[in-house]
Every structure is written in structure tokens, then in C-alpha cells.
Length: 387
Image (cartoon, rainbow, N blue to C red; front, side, top):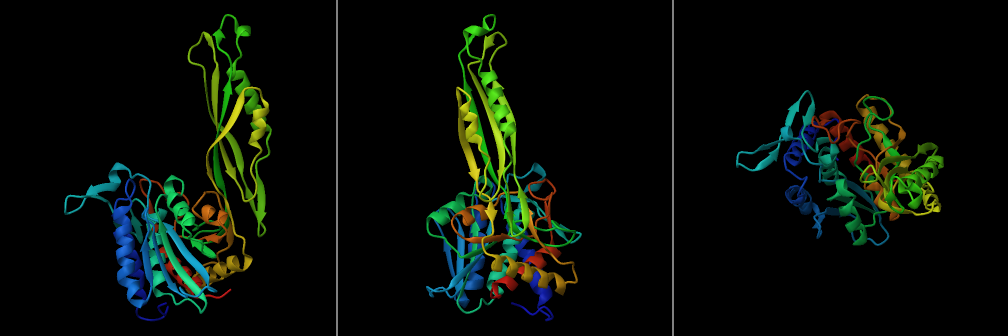
């Protein structure tokens, strides 16, 4: 890790910013291959000569290892990100000098603008440079991983886990900046998951002039909605921090024409889950003719190792103190991340990254260069710390 007081510091700060711009410029909403190529090439050039191992798996995940790679007793810490992004707005896309599609990248007022700058190529760049620079303690394997498919349900993380990716600890570099107070990068120790469900009520059609001849599926659906409304939202506590979930009916469709008793009605439900708790939506099936189906279940995350959570917070506080900033805190996050999949597989996780609320997925998406530098310090500091 470079000395905070040495002359190299501005070069490292600029390196993280330049690498962020390079990654952000590469389209990766429909195909992550080119972005993965850039990450893999940089890691091979910058870290393999010093003994790191760089891999690219079948789905495009880029994973690198250094430190106690061959020690079966070593503990492993992973710095984790993703290089896919949501589709850009029209003004975020242009062509480069070669006539190829490229994302528009601008640097102004201390920020980098472009699709994926906040979510989350800036933090990926900071983690890449930290991985290269940090010297892990004896008995520690340091891992860098950038996954594909995070924006579409964590397909890359799930593939890696199924193939044996199982770090003991992981810092997922999703956004945690400005959560407890302005201009701090906090440490998330728990986040919500998301379970998307469908209730389908079946009935029997009849002419609307003789409603008693049928079985109104909309009425059955309304009875099921009443059950959902009566359920308690999931809630829990992680290291003293409250995590409050929610359950909400978000859509209802039944009937095709005004003079026919509907024989089918569909309800959609958005549930924000918390570690270890979910709403008892199966109770809706007590209504005759109603069937409950889970369409998507993104798992929540709750850190399972207090020493790791405290070590990450200590690294974050050291970085903030060096820069003369207020102290960060342990916080919770409302959004699901790949930390949920890793936690479900047994990895102790925290989330800490540059993105601020309201930046991701917007047409004006941007990230602060100061915060990227701060994240580099946190990641490298944690990678060199014992706990």
C-alpha cells in the first residue's frame, strides 16, 4: 500500500480515477465481455508479475488471488464488485473514434459522470488498485472478484458460488456513502432482500347478469389481499441495528370484459425480506382457489462475524481520520446486493462503497473522485488488517 504522506499519492488517486473512466466507457448492459476483458487484462499486467493468479470463468466473472494462496489453513478476504450495468439513457451513449458504441464519460467538478460510474465501476476500479497494492498479513488469502449479471438477479455470483467460490469474508463494494451523515462512507452490516410473489385466484366464469352461476375470481383475490394486508412485515436486529422489511400488493389484474364474471385474477406482491425473517404469505392459500408462487427471491444479508464488521469499520474510520472527515458508522441498506448470495452460502459479508443514494441507474449517474480515493484507502487498509 502506498504511503499516505509520500509523493506517489496523487498518482494513485489519479490512477483510480483514470481506471474508472476507462471501465465506465465500455458498454456492459447487454454484454459484459469487453468490460471483463479490460478488468482481466489490467489484473494480469499489474498483479501477475508479483505472484497473483487471475482467472476468468465460463460466464465471464473475473477472479484474482494473492497472498497465502496455497495455505489450506489460510483465511480469505474478497473484495467484490460487478461490471454489468443497467441499460443507459440515450444521452449516455455515443461512438468512439473507431466508430464503436461507447458510453459517454465526463469528468467535472471532482466527479466522474457516466453509466456505471456509481453502480459500480468506480468502486471496482478502487478495489482493483487496492488488491494490487495491499500486502495481506501472513495466513491471509486476498481475493478480488468482479461478477457479471448482478443487475439481473446475481447470475454471476451464483455461478461462482456453485463452482466453489467460498471466501471466509467479503467486502462487497456497493454503495454505502452518505448513509449516516454527509460525506462519509459507512459500513453496511445488513441489507434487505427482495421476494417477488404472485397470487393467482381461480374462479368460474358466468354471465354477469347471473353472477351466482359462477365463482368470482376477483372476489377471491380481494380476500387474499386482505390476508396479505393483515401480515406483519418482517423485521430483525443485526449487531444492534434494526432492519425493517415490508410487504405490499403492487398489482392486480382480473377479468376481460364488463359483462363476464372473471374466472381468473392475478396479484403481484413486493416483499422486502430481512435476515432470517419472511412474511407468511403462504397463508393467502387458505382462501379457496388461490395459489401462491414465488417469482424471484433475492436474499438479504446480515453480517455473521462481529470482529470482521468491527475491523471494516476501524479501517473506514482510519481512512476518514486521515482525510479529516467525520467518523463512519455501522448502518443498514435497503437494497439487495450480491452480498445476499454470498451470505447465504456462508461468507461473512459487509458492504462498503462509493455510490451515494440517488446516483445509481440515473441519466446523470456520477461518482466522486474523493470518495473513490477514500474507498481505495478503506479496501487496502482492511486487506492489510488482522482481526
